[in-house]
Length: 593
Image 1 (cartoon, helix red, strand yellow):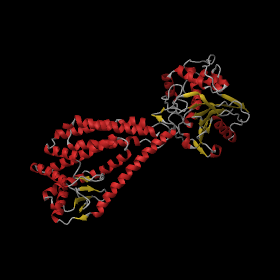
Image 2 (image 1 turned 180 degrees about the vertical axis):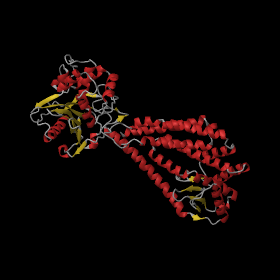
Image 3 (image 1 turned 90 degrees about the vertical axis):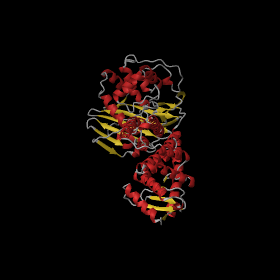
Image 4 (image 1 turned 45 degrees about the vertical axis):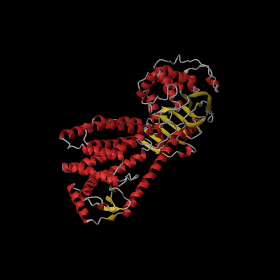
């Protein structure tokens, strides 16, 4: 879900920024200027974490906050049914409850579109900045002052920079700057040598070359990219403003380390001279300017005035603090993986799988069909992508709720009755006392919701973990999580669970498994027994999700199947059953219907 990723990215970025700023404040005296700047590179790593998860732009059918369905709840007065007879099949009772959603899916898409719109605006501003830099390149002329050119080459040698750099002057520049990834420029204002001494020019060259040496031009581009992506988080903007300031201070300190002590004041005066003569150019985020905002200049001068050479102990402390913060950032990775991964897909691979084109059966629907042949130990799958997609199980989950109720002794085969809750439903079969068999036959949701509440959430969670049911997410609320809410499962998982249920791989009491089997038995024809459960997911009175899962027992084999269909208004369990029975008939597995 996009909303999940959006919130995850906001939390991760904000937390990392808060940690870095807190560490900088608490350990200011134990961190050198270089390592105060280096701390910000950990932010780059943290900002990447939420994007590691796949399906960032998967908007899905629901709108969750970390899996929590934002809904008004279930209204007993807004119900629909996909109830219909399929041929001579009179067992199909496909009732469903409509979920009224206060936050429908389109809000999720609106949020994504807003984010993308912000990116486009920021990209436009970045393009404008790039065009301004391109204009500077176009108007840059080669330096003719030989003394400055010689000085430039000497400074390059002193800093052990061998790559070719373009040095020039431009009328569009009021402050010296460096920029360019492939071709790197160091550009001065026109006639700069008329108001700057050779010493001033040397200090400026050393400053700009240190930016180049430490790849600060690359970090500029990373900052711009992350600001485009994280435009919605003001803390990111604040962090990068601080990072730029720390970068300039770190660069100043690097220059001072290469100078004699008597030159420190001269270097500071050079900065002041440039500030007095030239204004800081705005919207030049892709460049490193020697000049800067007033607050930045003030702090730079203060740091220059109090400069002392870094001791070995300070360097060791700085590295240790950096590593600790790095561990703190890295420790977010598992949490981010959980938060950013909405678990809406099931990772399934099998060498014994055949993929089939059954699209003719699914006309008008997005859907999948999964069939497992127990004897052959083989899967047959239509639409591999959809077969791994997790969606709400709706009433198919009642199979397992019944099993949980029996296992926890809330109900037994002999005593499974529950009194009618007194609410008048539009289905006569619901408005009476129920036992397990009647409730399963008529898909009486209130019966299973009451069963859910009696078993209680902690025990339900333990059962889901025991059998590995889908994403095992109960955050949608007891009695509601399986009705177009937080619990989701894929067609492949439905088939795998049915097989495990049928063969009792989970170790439940055989009599309880058999009771559930008897409750979902549908019909027998020509020696083949069909068992299963339909389900319809209805949201805002529109049937968006249809299921039919089950198995066919023949004398020679058992076939497990799951069909899921989806569209915007008429995907229901009856249609899923119709599609399934047609496929089974054409495959010669079951001739009913």
